[in-house]
Each structure stands twice: as structure tokens, then as C-alpha cells.
Image 1 (tube, rainbow, N blue to C red):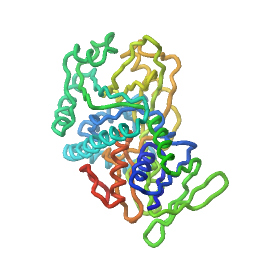
Image 2 (image 1 turned 90 degrees about the vertical axis):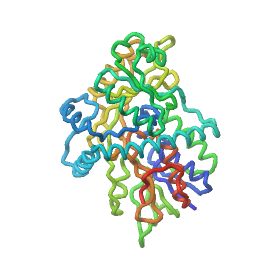
Image 3 (image 1 turned 30 degrees about the vertical axis):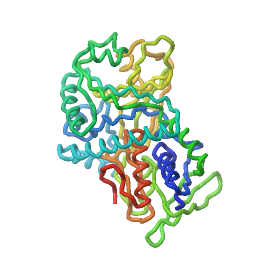
Image 4 (image 1 turned 60 degrees about the vertical axis):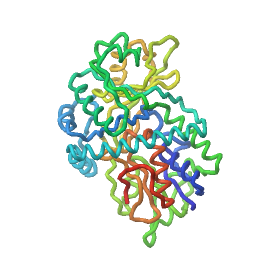
Length: 417
């Protein structure tokens, strides 16, 4: 089939790759001049299967109330006169029930385990380079209550075949990550998932796009999608603008991989997606020779910050701000990343010249993405991955390729039909 993929982030690019591997004629439409320049550009870098508990969980409403009005809060709702934000927020609260949390966790974890295995196979077959580290992910805690909550979460992960182990001895934490040597007294406990990974999603996406193009995938960069058109119950074409020219692109099937903009693009087709942009921040700092920098990717669960070593750089990323499609950098939230990192790892990097970035994560209230069919027989979805787009990208792409081919995906997951 001739298939058009809308979007060339990590989700769209992996989707194009696996559709091409299945023998399809694939074209990718992307408004940016290259792949992976928006949400995939400077994220936290984690392949974090162990981070499967959704934002919407029984403890979330209390935390959100506590954080209201705090400019540097890990999760910040900026209430707006925005019906979509309120709809999203109400559904988020419904997803906080124990039953929904358990169901969503299971979906997220199964997809993560599958996706990591697909990524590993892809890496072995292509030798793709992206500053990959396969040293695991350490979740650490400086708050006793947060650690106690993590013990229960780790037990749930293990019961679902994720190897997240509890570490309650400081010497064992130091053995995994010596960078804590000066501040280990701040840490009350940790969990460690040895099979988790990290790497530069931007490098991965661009290098995979290059490999895909060499195999025949056509990338239309600097092309802005203005409309998806339907006729007689099917998608007939997508209208794109390239410089001063506007034209239609036709195909047998279309896959929407437009991250936070997916809901806007399909709204006029009568498809309602509960996706809202969760604005995340990152700082990238250089690691000089001899620095006592982290070698294991880590998550500071209390502050919702992740740390990933990408070659001679340290990526610090986290927080979420629900404030529409605003992409301005908030200096308070930027500096909060640096302040927390310096307090934990004072001699890990050169903090004097950080490169700050912000991007819009496509969050669903449940943290479970939309993968599968729509009411139009030739329109498919692979979007809404929130903070786990890099983690879930390869598995989601392989699954949607299978669905388009009429096959049952290998992963047990609640697909959209």
C-alpha cells in the first residue's frame, strides 16, 4: 500500500520505518526541516519501562492541590478558559481511581516491555548510534514517604515481569551510582531496573530517518499539513503547504503521529482525542574531563526530574506544565532543574552555560496512548504517548504496522478500534 505518515518525530519516524520494513510505499510529511526537531528534540532520554505508573493515580489530586500556585512545582496546572483543558482535567481525576490506575499501569508496562525488545532488535540489526547506555535506571528518593510509596510500586512492577528492585542500603546505591558520593545522606532509598536504558532520542530519530530514506521512505520536510480531507467515509487526501505552494497528497492509508497537535488535526473529522500538551523542560550541560558525573540514568521521583548521560553531556529534564500550546521558556522552571541537580551532584558538570529547551508532550489523562484504527477505515492513530514517547516508540510503530497489515500485534494492549 501507499501510506502517508503525518509527523516525523520519534513516533512518526519509527512508524515509517516499520511500515517500510513490511513492504509499504511510505511518505512522511513534516513541517520542520528535519526529523525529531520538536517533542523528540531534547527530552529526558530514558527508555524507562519501569516508569509505568501513570500521573493519574490515587495520590495525584492531593499533590496537585499542594503544588497549586507554585511556579516551580513538578506538575503545574495553569487554569485557562479552555474547554479542552477542563475536559482533560476531569477525565484525569476519573483516572486517579485505584482500579483505573492499575489497568493503565498494566497497559503502559506491557507496551514498554514490548517496545524495549523491539528497539533492541532494531539496534542489533542496524547498529544505529544514539549515545545508547544499557546500564539501567535508578529511581532515587530523598523523601521517606515517597520511598515507601515506591516500594509498593516496585512490587507491582515485579508482579508484572518488570525487574524493578528495591535498594534500601546507601552502600548499594553508591555501588550503582558513585556520583552520589558527596550527598548520599540526602537519599533515603532507591529502586533499580537493570534492564532499562537511555539514549538521545533526537539522534536516534534523525539517524533512523536517514536509514529509512536509504530504504525508500520519502520525507517531505518543510511541508505543513493544513487539513485532512474525507469523502464518502474515507480519507481522500491531506492538504499541505510548502513555501507558497498548496497541494494535496493522496495515499491508500494515513497514520496520524502529530503528538500534541493530533487532536486539533482530526477534530474536523469528528474524532475527539483527549490529548493535551504537557509542557516539559530540559537543560543540557557539558561534562568536563574528570567530573564526577552520573553514569546511570536516574529519576528523581519527588521532583519529577530525570538525568541521563548522553556522551559528554548531561541531560536534565522534567516537570509538566499544562498551559495550552505555549512554548515560551519559564526562567523559574528552567533554573529549578539546575538548582536541584547542583544540590545532588555539585561537581558533575559545567552548570555555567546550560542549554534550556521546552517541548509539548502529548498527554492523555490516563497516560495510555492512542494506537489503532479510527472510524475511517484508512485512517490510523499512533499518538498521545505523553512522557513515554521515546520509551514506547518502537513497540507502538511495530504494533500499528501490524494493525494496518491486518495482523494481531504481539503485545497485549488496549488498542483503539
